[in-house]
Length: 350
Image 1 (cartoon, helix red, strand yellow):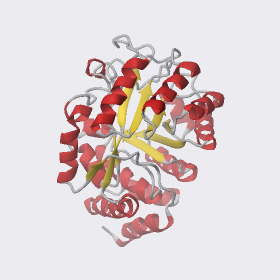
Image 2: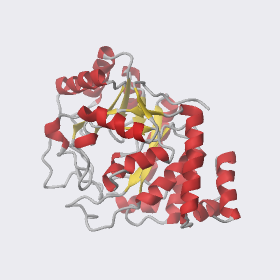
Image 3: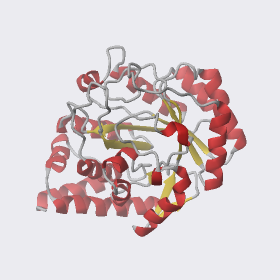
Image 4: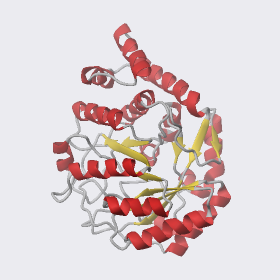
């Protein structure tokens, strides 16, 4: 690794930002020593804030109905092969009860943009989860809604909200979504969430169709400016039956490098080693943790619906991805020197 590249890693750690040109240089440098250096520095920064704790979030994929037709998504509205389902409030609360016994103290309610789950129903659900488990955090990941809706859900007890910005380049955003979806509205939603007081998460797919290094640089600069409490990134994986089904997968190596860069840029961020990374690489989640991530989201959904929430091909839904296998997850983390903890795992203010 040459001295210029090494200095850029130091500069990123010290100042938490780089110029566009400097970010591009780090992203395009094909150097094993660079990746190792980034991971080492990211681990040190993560451990300064969170020690060797890995937080687990219980993911409940409660509906695969969606009104949108995003070109990359395996549960898009026009996807003919999807077997649609919608969990009842009773089923969701049962998932939470099982998860609580397993040690989960955060539940992530994720679904498509399903009109059935209007404000009244979703607020009622959030309130019921919080009433049953007042020591737990509730994270929502249900897409774009009005500011008023976000406020109602926050008032009902929701603590966090995940909404990937997808891409900070409007033209690239347009190439991934149908005309009725708008990059500016996505940003309005993210700003509203943060202003209301949610711990807010954004993120993007690495290697999404049409993505360039310039796009990723824009994403990094957006994240730097927005300062989310959570960032979710994972490699793009095509979904059969979508317009992008024949596109190549995104790079796991670049994803892991970006995890380290994001950790150095936002030292106390909550950073998942995503299911997509675990799908793309057998040891992807472990490598993500070693690169600076500190969150894993095992699946708490009922076994009979997990295969129906196929956002992309071959998505992990059994084995160690299943919440029943938390013991295996703990073991896999302990083998690399980390501990799965029973904790809400809140964002730490720097």
